[in-house]
Image (cartoon, rainbow, N blue to C red; front, side, top):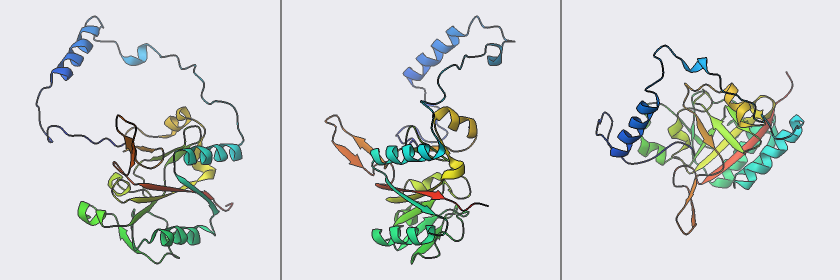
Length: 233
């Protein structure tokens, strides 16, 4: 998960840090001779880099996404609209899930076949209660084929970031027709920087200096991605 975790001064703290002051000092010195009237747009940045690495059909982009997700140890499934409820029920049953966290805007038909207790996210849902939930099911904002990355932006079918960080099992549904892009530049054009973005490339994992891999430290230990081909409208 790309959501950051770390220790430091609590909210509202104004404790000064030597490294921070050195960095800010260098920035001030570098900007000392910049006229006050000058704005960033006055100096356009060339963006002549490759927008994608090769050309692909939509089907090839989805296949590349599936391959890269698998390389990151996510489990990939494919289905259509009619088969989605049964697939989600199967994945949750296979996991032994009894309770599943869901965002308030999760489409109503997704969990109709699942014998689980839905726990709808709300501000009153405590971290302890969320930790007791077995799985979480969400949609997504976008998925990037070239990097095998799923992006959440807190939309109605995704909910708050916390519900995708605490439960140990995350099932994320990607609508391939309108949510799969080839590259990071294409994704950035469609995402709002004002939204809480979480970029997910496989299950949460870290490793120590000896490269011993540990999963589930900063988020779910298991990530399952469902590539959904929706019926033509």
